[in-house]
Amino acid sequence: MTQFAVADGQLLIGNLPLERLAARVGQTPFYAYDRGLIASRVAELRAVLPPAVKLHYAMKANPMSAVVDLLAGLVDGIDVASAGELKIALDAGADPHDISFAGPGKRAGELRQAVAAGVLVNLESFREVGLLAAISAELGVAARVAVRLNPDFELKGSGMKMGGGAKPFGVDAEEAPRLLAEIGAAGLRFEGFHLFAGSQNLRAEALCEAQRQSWALARRLADCAPAPVRVLNLGGGFGIPYFPGEQRLDLAPIGANLAELAARAAAEMPEAQLVIELGRYLVGEAGVYVSRIIDRKVSRGQVFLVVDGGLNHHLSASGNFGQVLRKNYPVAIGNRMEASERETVSVVGPLCTPLDVLAERMALPPAAPGDLVVIFQSGAYGASASPQGFLGHPAVIETLV
Image (spheres, one colour):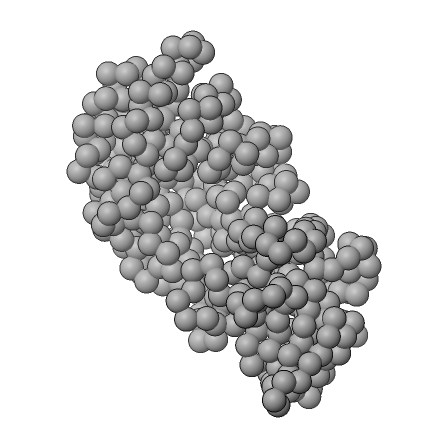
């Protein structure tokens, strides 16, 4: 992990030595997110994406209010997945016109809030059409809607497939013409399409293929739409490397592919705004999870470092958030970064379950109680994706530096 500097043996987060940052936070465990790295990642994307393609932040990756506040000023829109996330986005000052709301099980109350706020609702079922028509009549405001499509293809090589086959997300592509007709009959304000075929993909060619197929599907369905397409959200899926052997995503071919699609859109759907929706890729590498060693144990020749936080705070790093075969995230002893000696250890949390493993048989510098264990690649799907109430341990703190 080279995104963070090291000085005097300590990892620097936001240019602060780790021990000093821990003292400033006031406790361990904590998540720390580097605002400079987040801004740099957005700038890196801006340099590659064609100007005609808008960049949205998928807030589910990290809904910490300070992170959303920062990104609201850097990106072109925010994508939310609940009324709770919608409130955070609005409080961050995001323009309601540039907020979209997706999710397969939106409650009637959430839809009412979305219409009242004036955000774009990504329809995921026929049920939502009737609800939104009634809410629009009640509030005197036509609901802004896009159709989230479940395409007849998937994002090859993605860590989590969210399109293709039978899925709870969106409306099957073959059912979309009927849904579009109902939208027109209900008097809803149709604006476009949303497609999200998968996530955590490191293969540029697979992402480009999915984008081309998404464009082609939307182009076909545009002829059935009750109004011109104004928004075409091509999803995201950009991955970050977590495990040995994984290579960083090559953005250059993706930028070139999107430039071709933007040119086609200008000619064939001139009112359509192309959108890329990214979460993990914007924040994942900018965050670390930090816990303090509270015990060092040797059991039948194996060394265990017991830290003060575990799967209750970082379910993903424990392997219990989608991994089929558990793999170690990148881990370091954050206050011994320049140590050359290594020993094989396992890092475990304080919970009374054998699942509470943060690093298994890794080569790390010799460490003792009081030292700080750092898990990299922790800026996405960390605190908010973990069962913090499990076994009654204290909640984790998050900080943006």
